Length: 217
Image (cartoon, rainbow, N blue to C red; front, top):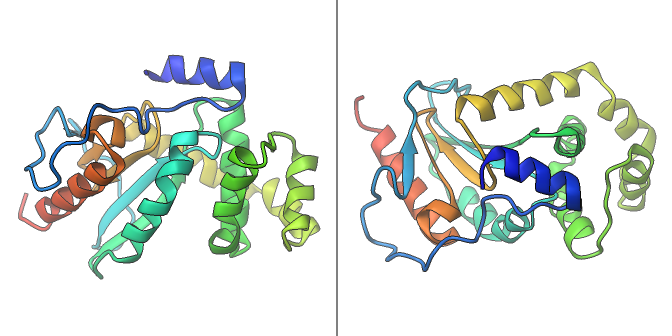
């Protein structure tokens, strides 16, 4: 599913499918990843901002059910990454709805609430079937979950959050991300469950790419 199809479906349904957990049968976890099949090498490196560490970026959208399904395995994997790897999440902004959810993430980040609220936002949309596409509804949800509503609303509309959204969009474009979830590594490669065949295989491919990033270019 390319970006145009992804955006059109998201606009039409409010949830979208993304390029997530719809790959073919999972490949053997120990197999060496194949360029062009399990991952893509960027023709021009994407910018990184990890102060000498190997940067790993998950591109996601709160409205994507595949991102929701991927989150538990990804979170467990990210918590075990070695000290020379810097992991971060970047919400995509393919369309206005994606941008609204990107502002949710960055507002939570500004308030130091990602750890407490990130999975709750996914659950609200995919389990409780809340749309969370209007500011008032989003603020109400945050208040119900212990976040200061006034501070969240201020962050949501802040210049800093708008800047983060713009930077995230630029990074997803530099990585040539057309769907989510996807994982970028070291500004040089990206993989995804839909490419690798399963969430577990995608993480194994990411591990292999991290190993490659440690070697001289």
